[in-house]
Image 1 (cartoon, helix red, strand yellow):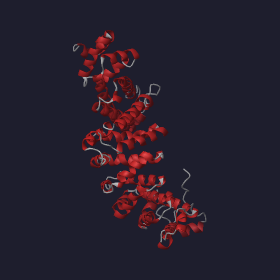
Image 2 (spheres, one colour):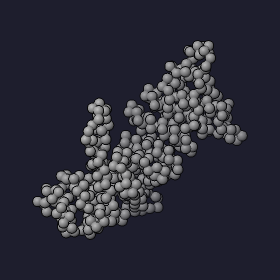
Image 3 (spheres, helix red, strand yellow):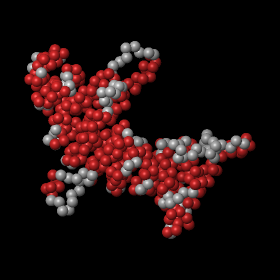
Image 4 (cartoon, helix red, strand yellow):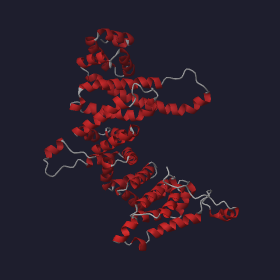
Amino acid sequence: MDRNPSPPPPGRDKEEEEVAGGDCIGSTVYSKHWLFGVLSGLIQIVSPENTKSSSDDDEQQMELDEEMENEICRVWDMSMDEDVALFLQEFNAPDIFMGVLAKSKCPRLREICVGILGNMACFQEICVSISSDKNLGQVLLHCLYDSDPPTLLETSRLLLTCLSQAEVASVWVERIREHPAIYDSICFIMSSSTNVDLLVKVGEVVDKLFDLDEKLMLEWVRNGATQPLDQPQEESEEQPVFRLVPCILEAAKQVRSENPEWLDVYMHILQLLTTVDDGIQAIVHCPDTGKDIWNLLFDLVCHEFCQSDDPPIILQEQKTVLASAFSVLSAIYASQTEQEYLKIEKDLPLIDSLIRVLQNMEQCQKKPENSTESNTEETKKTDLTQDDFHLKILKDILCEFLSNIFQALTKETVAQGVKEGQLSKQKCSSAFQNLLPFYSPVVEDFIKILHEVDKALADDLEKSFPSLKVQT
């Protein structure tokens, strides 16, 4: 990153250093006097005599003096230090930045001011202070209507920081609820922006909001289901138009085009939507959107993530995005099986992918034969527990989805799967190891069909899993 210059170096002259000793901010080498000068310059920029608008001045107000930009960028870098952040808070810098945001038309200056506030909000005491200022809160939320992507990115970063602080998260949720236009602005960004950094950060904000407040999520899901004036009531009830889901889909497509690994947040948003009935309906009752989401996720799990030529350990990196993707596919599959895009021929590639992930999971969970140092084992104990927790969630999702697909298999599809290798002895064994004993009835019904298709294979599997033989 070369956008923000480093803070000014300390004076090298010994005598100057002694004089400046009382001028340092906290335990840093940054000068209070210099910082006062920069903030005073900011005040001058937005003073009444400098903000009188005229057509001649408008263009000038859009530009930032190079020297001022360099200095305010140094403050931006410095604000990552807690002593500097607290000093800025003492000096009422947030009020100065609020004045800049309310009056300045310069995109670069607005971006930097929001960025400094974002750095300051990383410290809890300051975050609480910023969040409790209603006027500043209004001005910051208004920045979400900005047309400048860097300013939108910094605003989203600041909002995410505040939403991640338990003490003030509810304050911001309520403010966002009170400003319906924020929904439109976020939908617009997700549906039209090509700035992937911005899309990921906005996605993180939406994900956090939905995770914090299901009521807000439901409001946003229903927000786009407005009925056109000339459309009969009956038709509107049959096929409402949901805006949020198509916007999420567009953002996910754009993010995928640059780096599929960054899709995690959008997959999780979709997963959160499937936890409520209105969310599922918003996906499956929009045929085109439902089909596009299904195809996107199908392509990701079958051709992108955790492929046969990937090392099994790749699952540790992809476990959360896979859990979300499979969870959404499973919810769509279970709720709308009559849709054209859920044709039975897609079951076999899904079975193949589900079993492949389960096989990789078995490899990841194998304990090493010889542990190296006992203290190393202790150090990694927490991480392993956390990994096991996420893998268990993924396994539960995979098994439920696999059992649903097994229940829908016909004799013809099983025959095709045996012929093409998706239902080989090895793969069926992996599936059974994970499905039993919780999904015994499903496995037993599958074995019955398999007996009609390939008796030798069915007999082999029964020998490997004796509990099934009695039932068939």
